[in-house]
Each structure stands twice: as C-alpha cells, then as structure tokens.
Image (cartoon, rainbow, N blue to C red):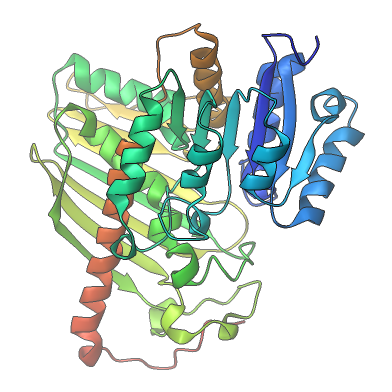
Length: 410
C-alpha cells in the first residue's frame, strides 16, 4: 500500500503520554489498539506534544519495532496544533486522537482550548476521538455552549466523533441494557463503587484539584458516565442535577491519612489537595436513585470496581470492569440463585476503536456510544458532585474532630 491508497487510515495523535502510548498503571494505550485493528492500513502522520523529547522517544520506540515500523516511519513531532496544520496541509487526515491531558481541552480559554483549535485548523478531518473527561476545568469559568455549538456544527458534516467512555462498550454492559430493554424495566437504583490503587499515581498534577479537577472529575467520571448509561439517560432517564448531594473524606482528617504515596504531597498547597473518598447520591427523571463512592484508598497496583443495578425482580452486579475478564452476576425473577457470567478477553478500548473505524469505512451504521453532547452531561454531573461535597465540608468544618492526622505523606 502507498499513502495515496484510499484504504490507508491517516492518523494524528495529540499527546505523547500514557493514554496514547501506555504505562504500567492501567490498560490504556490507544496506539497499540489502532495498530492491531488497522495493521498495514495505518499511517501515522505525527504526534503533537510540547514535550518534543518525549514524543520523539515514543515514535522512536515504534520505529524500532519491526511490527510497527512501517506505520510510524513517516511520523513527525509537532510542538502544537498550528505547526501540525501547516505541515500537514496537503494531507487528508482520517482520524485525530485527542489524548492530551484534560486541563488543556474542552474550553474556550487560551491554552485550554485544544478542541477549538482542532476544529479551526482541521475542519475536514473525518474522525475525532476526544478523551474523557471532556475537560477538567471549572465550567463556571468559561462558555460551555460555545464549545458545544462548535462541535455540533462540526459533527453535522459527514464525520465521526467519539468521547472515550470506553466502559460503555463492555459486553456485560450491553447485556444489562439488553435485559432492561427486553423487560421494559427502569432501574430502581444504580450503585457504583470505584476504589483506586494509589501508590503508582506519582503525577503531582493529578493530586492537585486546580489542575486535574480532583478524582471525581478526572477518574470517577468513568463510573459516573456508566451510571447515567445504565440508568437510561438516552431513553428519558437523565439526571436531575439539583438532587445531587455528596460528602468526602479529606486529606487532613484522620480517616484520610495515606501511608504509601509515591511522591511528596507536602509540595501541593493544602487547599488544593484532593479528597481521599467521595460518596454521592442523586435522582433521575424516571425515579432512579443513583449512588457513587470513589476512594483513593487501595495499595498495590490493581483497582477494585463494582456497579450494581436493582430493578423489579432483577439484580445485576458488574465487577472489575477494567480487567480483561470482568464478571456479571445476575439474579432474575426465575430463581433466588445468582448466575455468574465471565467475559474473558474483554477490551472495550479496542471495541470502541473498531466502531470508529467501521463508521469511517462506511461498514456499519453504528455510531460511537458517547457523543460530546452526551459526555457534557457526565462532566456537569461530576462537577455537581464535587461542588456538593465541598459545600458539605464547608458546613461541617466547625464540627469535625481530628486526632493525629498527618499531611498524608509517607
């Protein structure tokens, strides 16, 4: 194949970090999924990242591997979007993978407006994957509707846009939604628990609320979105935002002391340190009660996740959604006994990219499961949870009693 071959998929990566190239902390690695799905069809045009040495290193590793050398042979490093646009003007880009950190995207603010830059400089790109959350910036500080309007206008063209809420693509999630639809059920309750293993999280920016938004906005967003999806936000059961209530365990409380951090948290301003645990609940329009508990609490390397759905006669429990073998436990009206289903070799990242590629190829009518407009509701909900927990903390600050809490460093 040559680069002029119409079957070639020309890709531009935004960001040379973990989400696009992988790390030891989790299963994320967009480049390797595209390499496996596209094979010899993949032609990477470049990587945009101001950290030029990191981007060069990532490309160099790909070129050094005989299996991926051809796809990356012509890749170039660009310091920013305008430079990439000028250099790639002659190319028809098939797909842009926007994996830059959330502080730099999703807003109209200078330096945090990468989506707006992409729409301006690459108006004819056929596909766009935007990582989640759509932003970590405070929505009170910019005009959300301007970004939303721009993306809706762009998506009105013959194009494919996906926001990377990959857990929507899990087989057990599809199974739950199928059973609920088949029996015309509205969930009574959707309860999500997400417990992070924190020792390998050594990026101080992630632990700084003003940069990455805090753990609910940046990380629990996966499960907040999954709660909305399983509750049926797409079938008239959206969140009632003014019902959100939340409480948190903070860094300066006895219960919030962490003993295995891999960095010095004392370097972060006290008012910017993240909560250790947040629990929240809210209502949906058709009556569903939803709850979320997110904890920065586990040691070791593996996270623990669980989401439970209760409906008339039915209970579903999805466990270890991030693993390669999640399990789904089902109790139905037909029996008091649980049925346990294992789903080996699950890779929702790959499933999402396959949907994107098939849509770009015109091989399927299925569109990505999360649009930007949909993801916007998840973003608003995570911020409502954060605001509610901060308000609870302010109200209760004078009533707390601490014994020997430390600053959380080890």
